[in-house]
Amino acid sequence: YMVLYMPTLALVNSIAFRQMKDPQKEFAPIRVLGTLGWIIAGLTIGWLNWEQTNSLQATFLMAAGAAALLGVFSFTLPATPPVKSGQSSSIGDLLGLDAIGLLKNRSYLIFFLASIAICIPLAFYYGFTNPFLNEVGMKAAAGVQSLGQVSELLFMLAIPLFFSRLGVKKMLAIGMAAWVLRYLFFAYGDGASNYWMLIAGIVLHGVCYDFFFVTGQIYTDNLAGERFKSSAQGFITLATYGVGMLIGTLLSGEIFDKNALASGGHDWRMIWLIPAAIAAVVLLAFLLFFRERNAVAAGQEAPVAYGEASAVAPG
Image 1 (tube, rainbow, N blue to C red):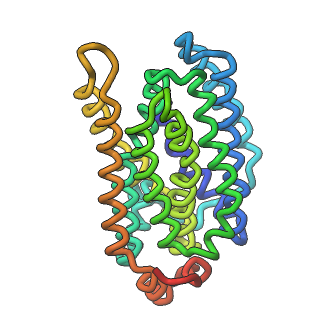
Image 2 (image 1 turned 180 degrees about the vertical axis):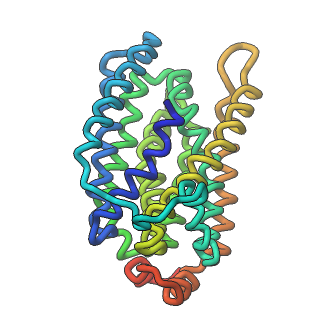
């Protein structure tokens, strides 16, 4: 299922960006509908009490049904032929590797490496937040987690405003800083007096995801230009949800197993402090080496539509 599903993340972005006249303003209001789907799924699972009864079969059947509907609906999407119409495609084209030239831009190279690195702590969140919340005693954890998607929805609608006011570097940095803060909240939160930390960590999802990943997708699209729009989205998805998440999944699973307690449960403080430290290192490196002025210069030298994204306060 995941082998078939994951490529659609880049594909749907490619189709959307190809159809938009002003992605910086149009992408967020469209992308927010995906977040709405997450909210509905989380609330449904919590309302039906599936996680408490360990009804994974019902959860997967719901996902399968939604995927089938999505597949049928996809036939109604607007025609989006390849830019290289009439030309044969290589394996490199299919993997988005023809966009590798973007890495010649020093600022984009730093962003690319930071994207891979930040997906390592991201794997901790995707893999272990729900088991963590259930283990510390949160009721209807999946439903409560949907607060993160509500936050994501609200912040995503404000992305165009933040983009024009803050610029690329500040938005990406705020997103990474939110990851550090979230994991610290999880490390020191509990189901008693520090319950608010758990809620705060969940609500921070809007900043964590929108300010880094959505901003990064728009930044990539603006820098790539018309010719490499689709390839660039595939390339950054391969790096993040491919390489970064693979490393993060292997690492988080190992750390989770090593912090199992003999008495039952896990040492969640240690489990969450590790991704907090990783995110902090990535943030520091990004702040030191990413230069938005350099990105502007590179964008002016290359045939790319980067004007809007770089016409903001330099970092």
